[in-house]
Structures are given as C-alpha cells and as structure tokens.
Image 1 (spheres, rainbow, N blue to C red):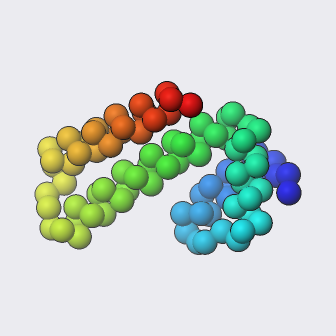
Image 2: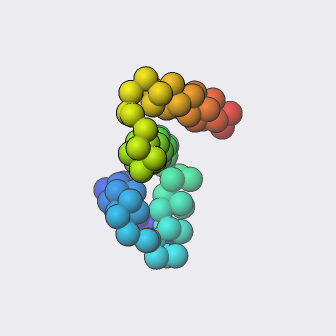
Length: 87
Ligand SMILES: [Zn+2]
C-alpha cells in the first residue's frame, strides 16, 4: 500500500499512458496525502496534461495554435493556480 516517491512519480507518468489499477491509484492517492513534494509534482503534471489537452483539441478543431491558445491556456492556468491556493 505504501509506495516510495520514485514509485509515485512512475505512477504519475504511467497514468498518462495507461489506466492504473485500483490498487495503484489508491497507493498513489495515499502517498500524495502524506507527501507534499509528490503532491506538488502531481499537480504540475496535471497542469501539463491540461495544456496538452488544449493543444490537442486545437489541432483536432483545426484552429491555429497561436494567440488564441495562450489566452485560453492562461485562463485555465489562472483557474488552476487559484484552486491550488484554496487548499
Ligand atoms: Zn513522495
């Protein structure tokens, strides 16, 4: 149940490529609840994922990845950052 920071980091990056098992997700969550460093890391990772999603959507919609992105992305980042502060 208890995993190392290294393992938590691995799970964070693997969650991007594959579905984690219930056990893995649980271990990861428990680790994040105890480890501030990994919590920050996981949030940054989420942010990167969010950015990737926005860029991918732009590409799918055939929209230019220009000023429009930075505006939308910075808006998303602002929301994310304010949600971090609430904790
Ligand atoms: Zn950790």
